[in-house]
Structure formats: structure tokens, C-alpha cells
Image 1 (cartoon, rainbow, N blue to C red):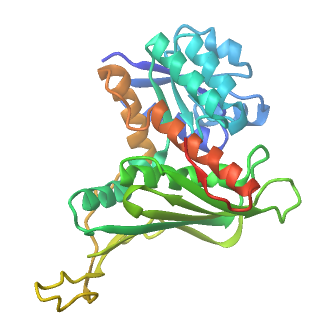
Image 2: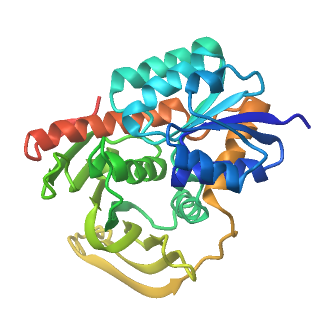
Length: 339
């Protein structure tokens, strides 16, 4: 089987994980890693002595053995890095968010289509077995009618220099909500504040309005000492919880719910509600690493020509939402339509 030569731009914590995963997967070989920081290149050389290193993107793109590029740099540099890689004829996997503006995202989609290249965005939670299980349960009607969703993604840092906490953290939750709802929200409302004095919102609260009256709410923060990674879906029949920090049961299904009682012909029962209280179910999940699942999916999309789950259009949907979030924050929480 031919190996896809991978070049990785940016070998911070997450970039180093990409080096490890692509080195382990059949059908790929990490040809070179690139970073401007000498200490990161030194660590990469020590951990992966078979992988070449360089400090220039031009040098990486000049290597014939590089077939695809993984971009793990700061969000504000994604457009420049991805566009250069696509223009050089390489497939690209870029970390979220794909870009920080909608026009830049649209240009990347056009460029990838013009060159017939794969453009995939690293919305890693969509390759998490727990989130996949939640999606399966919703698709099977287990929750009944979905009323609302909420998520919490909090921790003390790490604090980014180029984007705020909402752009850093909320794309995870927006991509999850979009995945569960099979589409993007119609409107958003958001508030945030800058208590750290660095010019960036360190926390925020988002409301996202989906079709059929479903509302999603996300709380993200760099300034909360309590680390939480949780997504909850509340339906008429059941409440489904995904807790990424619960190793024993990351998905739990609470057989509890409330829904209106169908009124009788005589009108008796009108406005009555049916309360349901049952067991707590912990579904069995296949043990797998989400990042490895994502990277394998990228390889499959290149080899088989299939469209990635988190393709450029999926990534652009998230960028559109985050752009509307910025406008809403500027308007002190005013609802903003998502284009």
C-alpha cells in the first residue's frame, strides 16, 4: 500500500500528537515537521528521529515527498498556511477554526475545489465514540422530541494570544451541535467579558437557535478552575449526557422526560403533561482515540475520494456562526442571523 507523505506545520502540544498518530497509521508517513521554534524542532527530533525537521514552510512545500499538509498553527495564520498548501497541490487537514473570517473560508473552499484537493477541518469531537453514540441515539428517536441542548467547556487556560476564548473553545461545541442537529443554527446570541486585561474575552455564553425551536447553549471559559467537558441533550423522553472526563461512562441516558398529553375528543386532558421517570443507562462504547479516528478518516478521504465528514463546508458553517457571535458580543447579546 502506498504511503501518503505528511508534512506537519506547527508542532506544539497538538501538532506533536499529529506526528505520533500519523506515524502509527498504516498508509501514511510523516515526512517532515515545520516550526519556527527551535526547541519544538529539537523535541520532535528526539521523539521521532526518523522525521525530518525544518523551520520554513517554503522548505516543507518544496519537498516532493509531501503529499498532504496538516496545519496546527495559530488560528489567525490558518488562511495563509492552508492557501499556500492548496496552491502547491497538497491535500490539507487544518485545525479548528478553519479560518477567522468568512471570506477567507470561502476562498479556501473555492481553491480546494479548483485544484480537486481534500480540505478537512479538525473538529475532533465528531470522531469521538461518545458523541457518535449521542448522534446515533438521537437519529434513532431515543430522546423523543429534542427540546434543547447545552454544553460546558471550562478550564484555567491555556490562554491564546491571537483569538479569544470563544473562538478557541466554542467551535468544538458549535460543530457538535451542528452535527447533532444535521445543520447550522439560524441565529446566535452571545455575551462575553475581558477580565484578564489582554484585550480578549476570557469567557462567554452563547445561545444558538436551530430549526424547529431547538436552542443550544454553550458556556466556554479560560478562567474557570473547574475543568468541564460536557454536552447535554434534553428531549421529551430522555436526557442524554456526554461527559468526556468520565472514563467509566462518558455517555449516560436518563430515562426521564416530560411531554404534553394528547387531548381526548371531549377535551379532557388538555394542557396536561406526562412525566416519565426511569432508569439510567450507560451504553457500551468502542474504545478508540478520536484524533486517530479523524486522521484515518482523512487518509480514507484522500485514498477513496470520499467527502470528509468535517470538510471545508462544514468548517465554514462553524466560522459563519463564530462571526455572528462576534457581532452579537459587540451588540451586547443582540440576536444575529447566521448567513
